[in-house]
Length: 364
Image 1 (cartoon, rainbow, N blue to C red):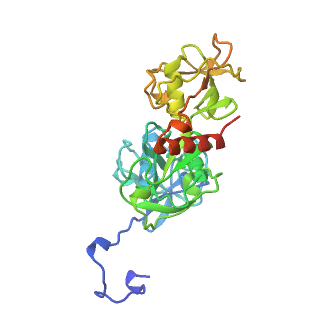
Image 2 (cartoon, rainbow, N blue to C red):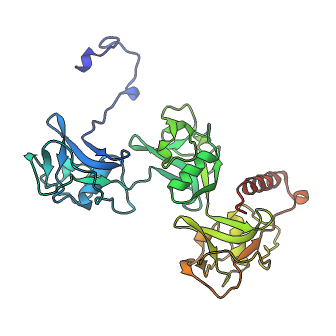
Image 3 (cartoon, rainbow, N blue to C red):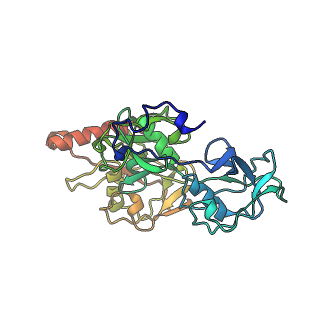
């Protein structure tokens, strides 16, 4: 079927301008046999059909080009080429692909051989693209910021209609943080983005990837409604409310205990600030309250803060390690926030919001 056979008003009859010109990206590389579009056997389009790829000579350089051509451009490490997705049917079409790794397309690589035949490799060339199609922008650290999702080969912001903590939890979990206690923010909390916007995001909260959630690429939203997220990377446990308890930090997929060695007022101020309890009265948080000792090994010790940092990750050389320390109890903090009677209306709203949010997600 030709394009001219499709239904239309007639050639030359339109009310369009050239800023509405249509474009097309034809798929010439695909992954099949995997559980999602980011993994599977590599197939390339040639002479009217997709063909299999011989694994001979297929390494990380070639995998980077395949994933880049599919829109999954990872700058954080190698893709996985050691996963066996089996052997497809039909003869091998492509072999001996030789890429430098920085090419945009496989066709730009040196002398890919398009031929019909077999090869010495038993499974077809396969790849698992390592790419997180969501990012946080403009926050004080990697745990917070404006949400941007990679959709149709471009980064787009997310409209805050329907945006809630279930959506935020999926974003945080996909980025390697705890989904529990993730906080959704609205109205361009971390500034306005640029470009196109996705809208009507609706996550159940248990999705593995944010792109598994329902959303629309058609939006009437403005960037003044860009969505944001704060992932919980510090929490207080064992206290009577969300402003006190043993300090726990998130690292490599779990919360860990903190050794009290070297932990003083500067570090306590940063913890409380990171939790949203920013004390401007000059009253130090209390670090002399014993909330006991948690279970499991110590994860963090020798945190060295100046006291004005926005998060512990900005402090000098925190040591994330598994071990024990000389302290008999874990680091504990009682955050001192302004009382309701003495605050301005703006601070009152901020205080109440923080108290409500963090009480809701307290891990006692």
